[in-house]
Image (cartoon, rainbow, N blue to C red; front, side):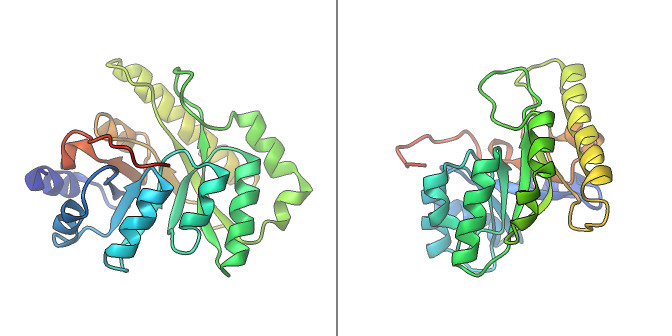
Length: 226
């Protein structure tokens, strides 16, 4: 845990950019340390780990699910999650809507796009996303609120490539905003940028940066199920 790094990052964020402190694999004590410094938005990758932390920690924490979400895990987070960053398929969005209905909620969601060169990254291609948005049934999903887009750049030292990938995501955001969400003021979030590349993401228009290891230190991968 590096509190100085946390405050340096917070102080460096321009107006309109929020920090998601990525607490995946980290103990609840570390989360409380940041909570006591004023941090309220935390991001987790795994639904069951997130559920456990929610149950034990203060209820004014805004929990964001930022990792790949399997449809059979939605039930763990639907009652309380503040935002899901990783909607990467129409099927997943429909399932989130079903669980939101069960709990009488409208769940805030971001559409994840595949912008990196690595094959392992999840996300929509632009034509897939537009096919979903043009489907008449999409308008019937009343219990999900599309608030913007998310993406991850390639893990590379090539800063020009990272700039290009984040710039592409911003272009997707603008296209979707103009074409599908022009009358929706809630469609405003660009979730991009992590510990290694968040300054570039901010330059390219990010509104949510997801920073973990720069604050909490190296990840501790245990056997927590997704």
